[in-house]
Amino acid sequence: MTNRFYATLIIPLLFFLFFTTGCTVQNEINPGPAHMENKNSSDKAETAPHLTQINYYDLIVVGGEPEGVAAAVSGARSGLSVLLIEDDRALGGLITLGKLSFLDMNYGKDGTLLTRGIFKEFYDAVGGTVFDVEKAKKVFTDMVEEQDTITLKLNTSLVEPIKDGNNLIGVRVREGGEIKEYYGKRFIDATADADLAAPAGVPYTIGREDIGEKEKTMGVTLVFELTNVNWPRIVNYLRTDGDKYSGAGKRAAWGYKKEGYSYEPKDPGIRLRGFNIARQDNGNVLINALIIFGVDVFDPESRQKAIARARRELEYLMPYIRENFAGFENAELVGTAEQLYVRESRHIIGEYQLTIDDVLENRDHWDRIAIGSYPVDIQPSSKDDYGFVLGNPDRYSIPFRSLVPLKIENLLVVGRSASYTSLAAGSARVIPVGMCEGEAAGVAAAYSIKHNISFREMTKSEEAIKSVQEELVARGAYLEPFNIKDPLTDHWAYEGVKTLRRLGLVKGGYNNDYGLNEKIDKWFFQTILNESLKKAGSPPGRYIEVSARPANEEILKSVAFGLGKQVETVHEAREILSELGILTDELKPYFTDNNKRPNKAEVIMLVANLYKYCLATP
Image (cartoon, rainbow, N blue to C red):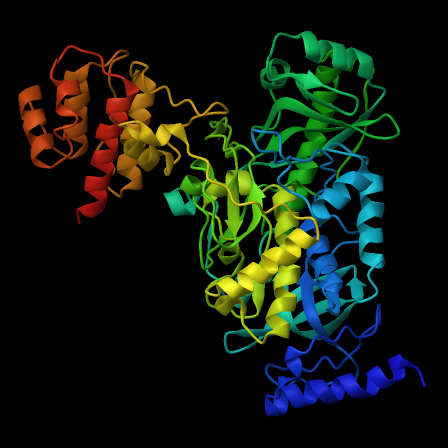
């Protein structure tokens, strides 16, 4: 008789014993048969499902995004039986169905590639940073099919998690028109929006809720495809247009910012920006440039309406492109991606939340399982917002604790919805980092099962983390410890910078230059003053405005007014702010001359002190 026949008899018996006697068979890694179709009763079960055939796996990965593929392949290479569930028709998600074929790479300032392992295998297989979408689809499929212990379920959507108390024990899915249940020892949520973690009960924030801006999430994009472009002309134009941020190569090009921002859309909720261009094997190009606002990414109907809106806008946009974009004079629209490029939705709260200070201070963590370095790129959230680059790290590590969600056991979350603050996610959300997390999660799942230790217990075990790290390095991951000091941390006003940067109010850009020695101007001061008061829960009675070139007297009076103090003289303002500890002894020399126009450094410190005071005052 075949091994599959024995497995059909034995595995349900072991599963029955696990749930009825609490025996330790769960802790043994059992690969099980490969690619077996699983059917079971649709009876609702919470703690002891009635099994008719095999529907039990060591590891269940929900989400066929690149992060999910990495997690499933990693788990299988660790000897686990893996079920990979994807609700669409193909693997790769954003890369394949979203046609985002331009990778956001993570290099250290010394040129070191920081994201390796399974991501590097994919990178090499598709041919680099920019690649052909159909090739990527085949690479993902091949990576999964090469593993005999992965069962892949496409067109299978999650209905709900199955829990026993706070323990995640299974998933209920819709497969081929039927409701089915699958059970596992460990789970990885690799969906873009934490679609398994959230309904399971994991706490999370949405958009920039954590900094008092819940209504703000980064705009979404619909990638579109053009044919009949003149690639040599595109390359020549972008290499000689005088913009240091433009450029082009054999397959990639980026620029046309002036042309993009000059377009006036018909849809008031859409904006064109500069082009990110990815050339495909057939000579067509994929364009990432069209940003859509006002989309509820949790509502399928809203997503579809956004796609329809963008497609209608392209009817007006194409003549503009042909007339204004060098190399696109004869371009024709081929079509658009099937899926939207959604940059932000949920941010789960885990054992540790990666912070913007972690990212921009180049912090390492003892339990690092991935290393990133992408600039903190916060895309616009509305037509009145143009986005910003908050800063540009050398490198920072992702701790294992950021994959372990609060409240729910047996679950890891990887990708852009992992445990990052919203600003930190501006960097850590990128696919190469997420794929490295997926690989680490697969290794961690195997360790957890083999050693009968929960993911939460692993966050407190140096032995467990060291073992996971060593295995990842053995497989090709880059996890070298580092100690890289940001010179800005020695600046006397750094505490103020850090306070307001956490709120997204001061930005260093690609060069980490906060302009601390520049003179203050009207718009910068008004923004940091009004927004910091609002974020502290103490919005002023009216929006505070100042003159074009505010001097110390006007600055001090305005800060006092922000506290609700009606002062007649700068002397009164100075006394009040000194008494409250806002105008500190360190700051007083900078604000002695009433007619002097101060630098950003001292004003940032003053407003940061105001924010802290308001935050601490009931």
